[in-house]
Image 1: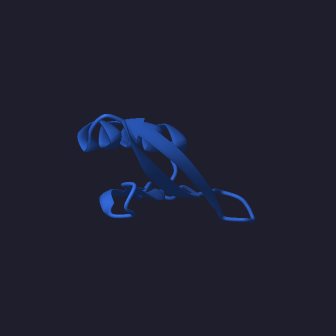
Image 2 (image 1 turned 90 degrees about the vertical axis):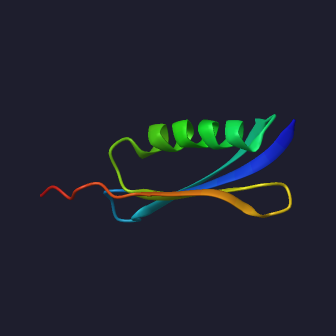
Length: 73
């Protein structure tokens, strides 16, 4: 089982503006780690904008995502 590192920045609607989350993803394959990361990132966003980066144990970027949600007044 390999360890991957997921970092997410989520744009919040408050004074501080950005929330940063960091998680370890334990998965047997890179594809499984990406699938887990996509699901976790979608849940974390909850209708907000954000960016995610998944790195393997060596620090190599294996997946990135950027989601932009429309701004409502």
